[in-house]
Image (spheres, rainbow, N blue to C red):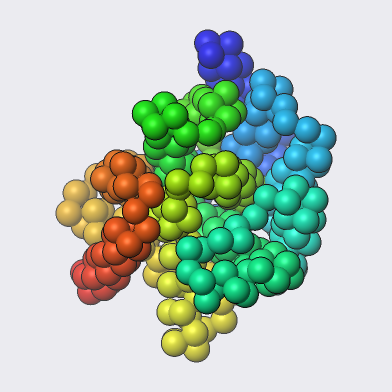
Length: 336
């Protein structure tokens, strides 16, 4: 464990130094999600979170060459986006779809039981099951990228998911690759620290990679533990997934292309609200906003964790959560 911690921190320092020196993969774009909020145009911050995750995870907990190939493909796709080489959202989604379909078919890891007979009748058809899983993972990947506009929101979110899975596996003796999860938690904890102070960002590559990895961790967790409700997995991933769906619906209603970026996401409004209430440096407001979101979700996960088997209760909790999200969203939008 100590070796993993020191290796991750050392790699972050080395990569940061090299990338800043070479001025490569640096968050200096005008369209930068972070700089849109903070206005720190000249600040050089490497978008190296995904590279850190891939290198450390495979060095200490190598799975297989196919998993390495798939995760590397996802990371490269995100890096091409970070470098403004692949700017079209439609092309990125198309490539994401190809990679995800290959993984779904080859690995055989996918949802095919939603605890509802009418839906399961459709999922009995292999192409529909693959299509459903593809849709869910695409929503998660791009939703995670959407919420990565404030420090610690994504890293803190998936750290919380990791912690809950680890607690459940120990408390209820559920099947989980605890070594793999522990390694991810070490990596994310180190990135969290640097991200907290605005010294390292995930970038599109890191956002795509971590959400892709967790989509399959959670699907496999569900498959390996028949007592776990599929709606528990839904609850663990509700925020990035719903943020993406809500954004698509909002833009459709307002007749705006889903490819058009805007500053009307939940974290934007929360950032502005906190900034008005606490007049301090915008970098600090950025970090506070991300941690408010992460802490809220951690509390929610702790509330539902012991009911991982209770489908009805989980569905109701998710409905309540979404209702609260929408209420707070419109409250904050009026304040903005």
